Image (cartoon, rainbow, N blue to C red; front, side, top):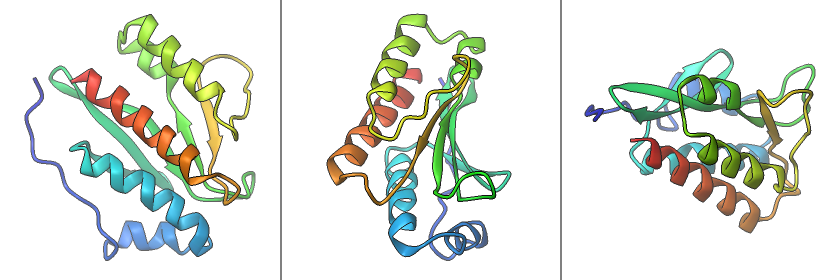
Length: 147
């Protein structure tokens, strides 16, 4: 079992301030909600590229579940990308991945991609709080199940 104290990122952290500066307050609240609940569940986030990785303890290592990215040239809203191919290589049971994929594909902003390796979920202000809560609960449940 992975046993470590993880760094918590707060509003005053430079990486958080940098990400927040790239989006409107409404969009930032969505990202903040997702990152905050992930950390409150005891799982780490870490700066990764221009965004943050959502990691979960898996055996004696951390496994990346996905990434939260701010808007960029190709994406007008922040987004969550889930690393389905990476999770498969980490030997996550196929039934767990299939269940996660099924849940994600029903999410209102899911963007179908070519190939099963990456699921993209734009985070827009058109999302209902219920949809966001459902997504957060599902991701946290999946992450905690890996431990």
